[in-house]
Image 1 (spheres, protein in one colour):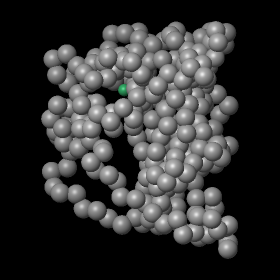
Image 2 (image 1 turned 90 degrees about the vertical axis):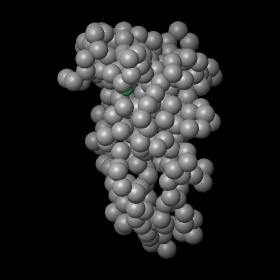
Image 3 (image 1 turned 180 degrees about the horizontal axis):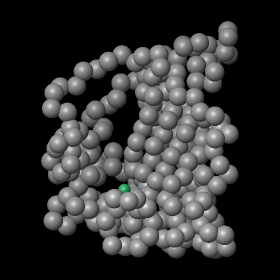
Image 4 (image 1 turned 135 degrees about the vertical axis):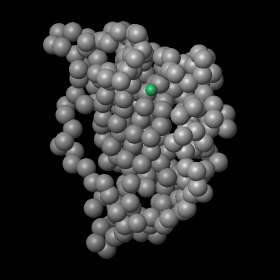
Length: 247
Ligand SMILES: [Fe+2]
């Protein structure tokens, strides 16, 4: 089993609550009613949290990592700037996380989601679905092709907008490494006006959510590239990491 060399993996590092935004952040209106009202209780990782989930690679379709094509009608393409988003998934010990499931979802170039509860007046793109997924390779790399999403307004304060962003969900080597986050784009002035971004106290932590333009990997006459590396919680125990399975 890939995620437990030498037997059972060790426990994961505890989440650093100074880095993550608080659950209760009044500037982000819906956090008020959905945040816990009682103090949190820390539980030890259970076996299933440390060893699951295990994914079958054959469940991914050939276009799952290509949002430009995976919803487009034959011979048609979605509207908007073509981009490549790629990076590495690492753990807190800077080791690559191979076999991680990376899922993304996003609005189209006009800032409109394909969702039945979406109410923004920007139009749907008939050739863009806005969902994709892939599995990291042996060095922890993932890569998507997509359309750069647009900013959109949302009902929070009197005039709040989300900066252009891509939602990410990552399953690492166990449920304790589950991460859900958002990627923003270098140079976007909307980032610093967003009430959700502002729930993050440390500007340096916000910067880590901003993908720089990756000129070296930009494809001439085709697509600009953005680089977004993701760090999951590492395993505290490194004792068995170099032992082969069954040893
Ligand atoms: Fe969003």
